[in-house]
Amino acid sequence: MLDLWDGVSQAFFLLISLDSDLVEITLRSLQVTLSALAIASAIALPFGALLAVRRFRFRRTTIAVLNALMGLPPVVVGLVVYVFLSRSGPFGVLGLLYTPTAMIIAQVIIIVPLIASIAHQSLRELWSDYHDLLISMHTTYFQRIKALLWDGRRALLTASLAGFGRAIGEVGAIMVVGGNIDHVTRVLTTAIALETGKGDFGLALALGFILIGMAIAVNLAIHWLTRTEQEGRW
Image (tube, rainbow, N blue to C red):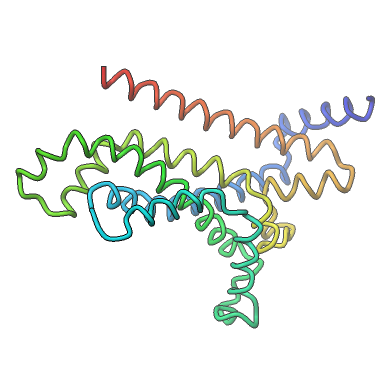
């Protein structure tokens, strides 16, 4: 019990004093996750809008596969990325394995299906309201997608925040492709696992508090955006 209290007190001291290792790991986590989120959103949001406005063969199958990929095991993603980026893999010559870039690639693969699926569900309802108007104006598919993305930006921000929450807490794929190298690829989740194994509960708890704080902030933001969107409809 004393070890627990010592760890908590040390964690608060590290937070208050802005420990250099703590700040470095946190900033690297944000750098990797925000980079992955920007790339994933640029891919997933237009794709979700396309699924909402375009009718094509195998559309239902595509949506079903997209929803299924939301539950894709992160460790499997890490393994696939590792194989492709390893020295014997097709992209091994790029030397990306055990770098933040490899971690970003893994996170992008993990969160694209989540963001695209949420975006599609949100924009599908919006498209039902805009369908007749946009069709009567003889708009192109690009113009329809652009209109949906702009008018549904609040719901799409919710989708992106959900992707951020998924990515920031990821550990399996990140550990496989990043290697948890100190001052290079060590992020919040991998550092917590390492420090817990070493018995350094102070730093582990401090990192955990930061991770929990980010998760709470994201959930509060999603709740606020969802509530304001519902109020706006009324």
